[in-house]
Image (tube, rainbow, N blue to C red; front, side, top):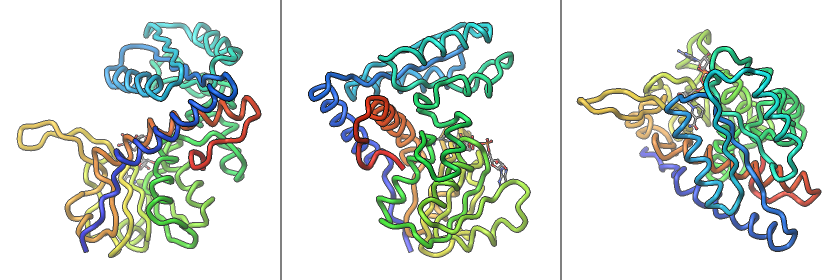
Length: 296
Ligand code: NAD
């Protein structure tokens, strides 16, 4: 079998179009412009690239983007004061604090100081609890993007066997919750899992979120399974810097029914879902009906 490629770049463009349509309606019908505030502390080069890209796409979809760049040595109380100000600013519907934070800042404390209704990353402990109990929440962007692609490809996921490799708070665990919410039978595998190849072989859906280049070979994949590769790993190959995922794309594409590429799969969907979450947060804040197809 040769897998169908799930084109995350193209799908992200359709999500952004939907977001832009909702933003235009919010402006025309209600005089509201959704606003996203992004806080960057320090000069981490990868974070700077992400923040720029988020700001650009926010503006392109018609929303307001507020960037707050703070010095790497910013004291915690100063950062918390900024978050408090943004929590109370009616023009700001979404707040994102770019991670990782410099070592002297307590990430949990900072994330949990964001108003859960504005927590467009879905990392606040309240949103984690709401998601875990199947209630309306803000859903972390990367797993939301994976879920959207799976729903688009399969329609219903009900009854499918899903294996999520990786148990991080930002990808693995919320991904598993979302798949459970869509009635999959879910296994979370991690670094201590016994016989990972056998666990993966059972899966109709494999989501790899490990951070190890090309760790999953094609021989682990059940014939016809859907493979979602979250990994972003920069490696050197033939003297060049290249991006690869957590699955060995060529051999997995031989066995899978469908697969996301790296780059061009999950990555573009993550920012698209951040924009979607901002519109959702804005609608909820104003007591308006939520945009269809942009939430979990
Ligand atoms: P993490 O380091 O927080 O978690 C990795 C998980 O992998 C851990 O739970 C660990 O138990 C598991 N693991 C490690 N070695 C393993 C092994 N040998 N077998 C099975 N499981 C193993 O990473 P994360 O933040 O969840 O990110 C995972 C990957 O996804 C990274 O490559 C990251 O860059 C990428 N990522 C991509 C996006 C995107 O937008 N595409 C977003 C977030 C993360």
